Length: 273
Image 1: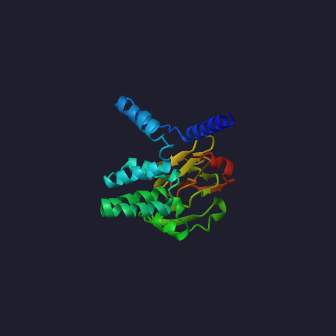
Image 2: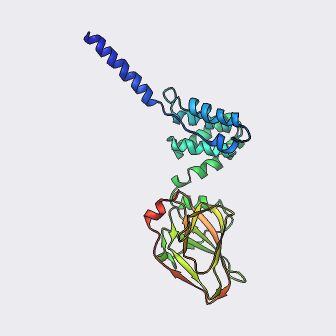
Image 3: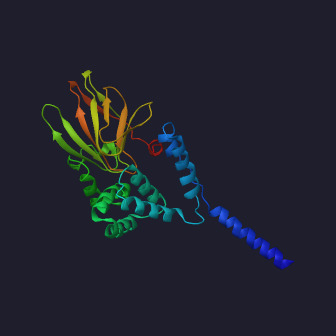
């Protein structure tokens, strides 16, 4: 009787462990992007591919499924947003920068050198925060045509983190390229003017934020244009996980000046995704 109880308990433990090891993957990309156009495909993508196949983690872990998936995509020469998504997923599932570098190098010998080159470009963007110091700075410089410039020592007291400033134009319209390391942002501030004035920002590289007082933060990506009227309290800077650069255009006005205010608190900043 005792042996039967032990065996029953062992079977229950094994069964419970198997159940606990399974992780249901929730995916909505299919319905979000194709729900109206191709509802059946969207259903199969979200509920079968991810809801069933990817969720069989008791048979094959998420890390290994990511490895298999990115190997298949790269081997087919697929380097669109789907590869970016699966590279991001692979990183979340534990594949490190060193490992993805080795994986793509290995794939190159079997799938082709040009395919590996294309995949490395996307992988570097996904694992960019794992690159540190001068290597990270050099990698970011390769993403944009404007120089990073020199450390922004003149205004450092009004920034949290490290920023850089590069003059693009000092004649006709003053233009500066401002670069922020991950997590860097300037204080709340106001562009003052009795007439005209203000500032315009154009995203150049990386990902950043702009926020006006009392309004939700707006994400800045390459090509995003932000118009900042005079007299508006605001701040801007990098996302926590990304280098960021924008061009800053000073709008002509009368009696223009900057009023620097309090820093953006860590509590406020940490709410941004």
